[in-house]
Image 1: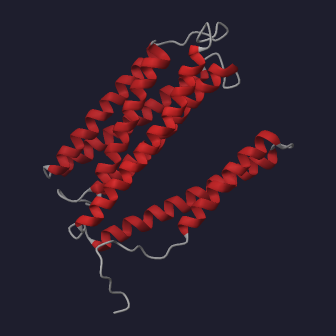
Image 2: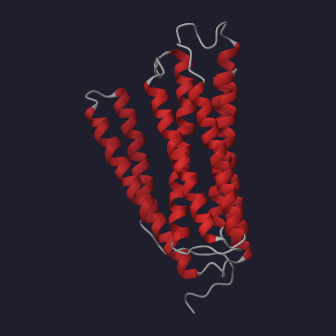
Amino acid sequence: MAHAQDHDFFIPNRSIWPPVSCLGIGILFFGIICFLHVTPTVIGSIMMGGGLLLALLGAISWWRDSINEARERGYQNVPTVLELANRYGMLFFIVSEIMFFAAFFAAFFYLGNYNISWPPENIPSIDIHLPIINTLLLLTSGVTITWAHHAVLDGHRKTAILTTMLTWQLGVLFLIAQAYEYMHAGFGMSGGAYGTVFYMLTGFHGFHVLVGSIMIMVLHNRLAKGDFSEKHHFYFEATAWYWHFVDVVWVGLFLFVYAL
């Protein structure tokens, strides 16, 4: 009777990994501050590396435990109220991400409005061909993740596994192309206000593509192991929502940063 509950919400098991993840992130960002403002910079480098490893250890272990708890509970035994709570939580998270990128876009437009030449004349022109390829890669990945979702709904697991694999591979190709662009851009983050805003916008978007690709890799692995059902597959839906958000942000970046 000690474990009985009079509600439909899922109470996770006690875990040390959430505070470990938070501690790692805190050390990581404190290390970034030390790297930028404290001499010697090796102190900040050590803190950044240690914080990143601690954050990854906590996040991966936390994720693993959550997946195991979902498998123990069963995908057919998810209360409606828990489904709604998960959906609202993911929607609010995406809204917070929209506000995040809106702030950077606002900075880009503000600086462009108060500068006669934008980009400044000292900034080399950016080759539009690679961003076009990246746009095609992300838009195609949006099609494949949607295809995979419909395959799950129809019970076609093999098709879902294949199209999910194609999706994260397209994401990895995008990141490779973006890294190539950075190496040949001709200006850096310290190249004035334009360089700072350009790399903040495209770099944070690239980070979101990296996170989304990892999420889809995990999704692909879970599909291959038989996770999810036709009616209960919220992790799949949440990952697809996140990936479509990444696609939409990139379309805005392409139009306002590269094309115009």
